[in-house]
Length: 235
Length: 404
Ligand SMILES: Nc1ncnc2c1ncn2[C@@H]1O[C@H](COP(=O)(O)OP(=O)(O)OP(=O)(O)O)[C@@H](O)[C@H]1O
Ligand SMILES: [Mg+2]
Image 1 (cartoon, each protein chain N blue to C red):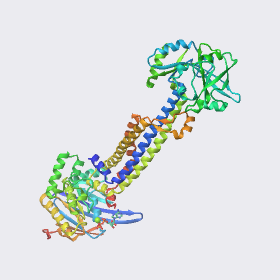
Image 2 (image 1 turned 45 degrees about the vertical axis):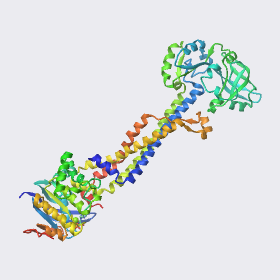
Image 3 (image 1 turned 180 degrees about the vertical axis):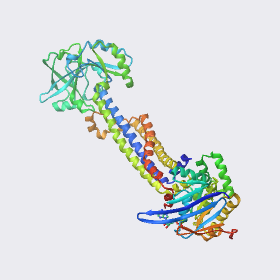
Image 4 (image 1 turned 30 degrees about the vertical axis):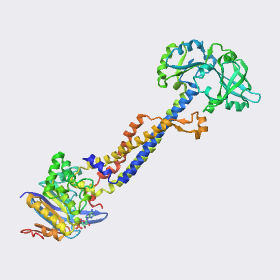
């Protein structure tokens, strides 16, 4: 199996004035293509910090990170942005979409930034919207969509560039459990049908239940890392 | 893509954009209007002087301007005049003899410039004949004089009264004559009115022993734009050492003043420009503060930070372009409207009389103004967005995403 993420002894210390917070303590982790992993842990345990470091949005205090075999070191902001554009997809808790763009335009955006011609970009975006069953939302602006619909468009946007991994930080936190379950179904489906690699951060039991691999993090350290035999599909 | 995105972004908070746009529009109108008005005023000041006495062109002895004495006069001006009369571009021309002197009534006296004119010709050169308030203009006969209201008041005389004129002749001997006031004039220029009185040319020539002499030949032309051209036509017709000067050369102080005024306008531009910059900085800072999370999302997608800078600058540029267009349209409409009616300054008329300007000013719309507004306003607003854009450029993705 191809390795998409490798984290080696990553420590992250936040300094606010004279107060130091150790958010991650020598965390090591490996994720291969096609995994559907949930990073679970109580609030403040370091989930978001780890996801952001893997996503190159933040830099570790010490330790090393490889994405798709490439070491993420002291690169410029522009170089890191370019790296994310091609290799990483993000889904956040909320406010993922650009309000002035339609669903289709939001999904097209990363491709346009990659320099893909408008026609082709739109075609590819349409395909992903169809895969996610939300083609009818194409002309809608975010404020004309429900929270669940917005999150689905966000998944489409994260997927459209075929990134090495999609990092989803509490993607269901703002949704009711039914909508959340539906969203998880969809991501699971993308994982199974298109071999999309997902890494979630969540303390939502519903999400934790879905993980085929569950990594528990506590006080900035991984305390458990287990692969479940088969998904305990809900509903 | 950024162009489209920036265009949509400025309409997100339509109210705020409308406010900043209207402030730009008002600024552009203010600049255009004051520019047009001052140009109109300058034009009017020049025109006033031209119509009052200076005329478009004057033929002079080259040293007369710096030393206005009979020593530097035109000999045989009638011959020169006959040649000028043949030029089709010339509307009117007339011989003048000016000499400084004293005008005395029984009660008072006053220093004046006595101007000997050819009344039938002078009528078509200046507005004095049309500015007679009581009595009549010169008939051409000797012993007649036309004085201003100011002079009449000072001398406590009226039409029909007699005055004694005194002036030096070519040899420096003081000569005097008695003349009857036949008319009293009043123009829009009180300084001028205090200075000048008019008599028939032969009368003054006889008085100061200056037969077949003149100090100037005044020329009015059909089309004001052709001044330089007509000047060139006249030059070869003149016997040396005579020269022909345009109103610009004859009124150097006024031309200089107008130029100075144009320079002063730059201060006004700077103030308006600074106000625009502050407005834009403020607006754009507000606009980015409410979108920090969105910038975080864009950065997480992988937008190059430079493109965020371009986005912000484009948004400000749009505001500048829209504001400039709006301002130019509104400003041009306003100026065009005022151009036909003129701006009546009758209210300030007394103040203007000392400035020497007629009461109605016609603002002048210069195409260059429009071009300037369309170029500089977007540049100014874009410059105003540099600081907000820099702040966005420095944004750390994690901080932006955490920002609520
Ligand atoms: N920018 C920061 N400055 C200072 N401390 C920070 C910063 N970001 C995170 N922390 C601290 O690091 C620790 C881990 O935070 P993190 O956000 O990764 O936790 P989390 O597991 O995502 O929590 P939650 O479930 O509440 O989202 C916490 O103690 C937090 O207070
Ligand atoms: Mg978190």
